[in-house]
Image 1 (tube, rainbow over the protein chains, first blue to last red):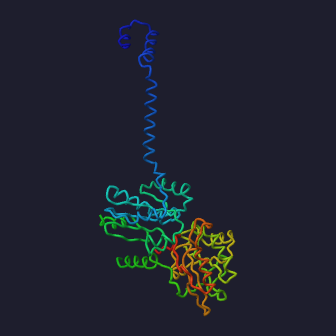
Image 2: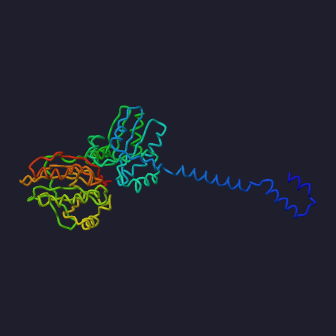
Image 3: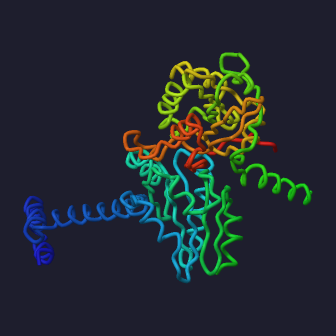
Length: 197
Length: 202
């Protein structure tokens, strides 16, 4: 309407024209500035949320369990193959093989394979060491912290031949069960898992 | 090439990964190792003791750190009764620089170890005991005929996190059993520890 008005009043002075333009901004779209800022802000928030969701690893997702709580997870009877890795942030060879387990978890994400990373870190290091590590290593596999200081009790219940040395990995499911006191590459893990599916 | 690969795999499997502590009652392998202070210490040096608590240990392992004071206390309690402690560091210093000789010396001095802290530089002693981790304890009983036999293998007690929450002090109990003329029960325990860092061959 104002545009039409403007066109019709071509003879109006420059000053008036400016006045109209101002009125056009202030009068016709009183909320325009606000809406734009709002939109920009929400867009920014959206972007930051996306980045957050992409980079942020489930910090709160490190579950602290007792052995009694862990034990059922070592003998589930269904059609899934379970890969249970025992590790700790203080164990250098464990850290070295974490990308292999991540790659395995990624490859079989939609298949019936579940990778469980059982940390044997000292429980008081949960917030100072373990969670920062899980975030930094961008671990997508489920991480548990086993809090049970009497390892003499539960080591033989995981596997009677386990000396207590880590890394160690239990692979079971679909009629297969084996405990490995060794380090793994992705290829070695893949060669074990693939035939079980 | 293939044969070599399979052989290597076999060796790794037999020597490294499937290792278990030597059986209870078997003769403890002799050793003669350099101490951090430059002296040499042998198992036979302990001929006048009732036995020895040999502990494979290292510097950076958090489980060792958690147990360190308790292992020193073991020595203070039982050395006067004939069962001193001996630490052996089995780790390869190239694989784990924190276990280099100067670091071993530093640690022993800093913590004022009242016992030797020996260096298994050739990595021949820890495999002869079937040790796989640190800390790992081997309680040896002096048979009096120049031989020591293995009486207990395993860990210090049942709570590495909290000394005040220990319910069974396995190592002390084992020594007390020997002092009383009995057999330790349990004679073996298991524990989480830091894997021994072997030299890389290839």
